[in-house]
Image (cartoon, rainbow, N blue to C red):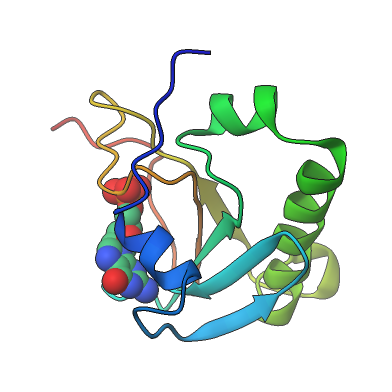
Length: 126
Ligand code: 5GP
């Protein structure tokens, strides 16, 4: 797997406690916090604590414990913010951008969980 993790990225600094964050949930392997520039009324970022760059990197290289913890944290966050349809929430979109074409800004794997309004079509054309 040809990934080199840059430990100076902003999420690594959040994990080290160098930058504050608005935490929604923290577990053994995962941190969920509010996006600083929310693009919807509900916008939470879920990140693994380990040094993974993208979704494919995480899915291929993380331990089963990390992956299960991450997925379960995403599910709990959807419920906590009132977005999970199965719990009466209004729905959400889970997005993970990767690399140049995916327009990934921060090179630490993260899942965006967005909701609280109609989110429109999945992709814009620009
Ligand atoms: P990406 O484009 O990499 O998928 O998304 C990165 C996200 O991180 C953006 O939505 C951006 O607003 C968010 N972000 C960047 N810096 C910070 C920060 O210092 N704190 C928080 N909470 N979010 C950040």
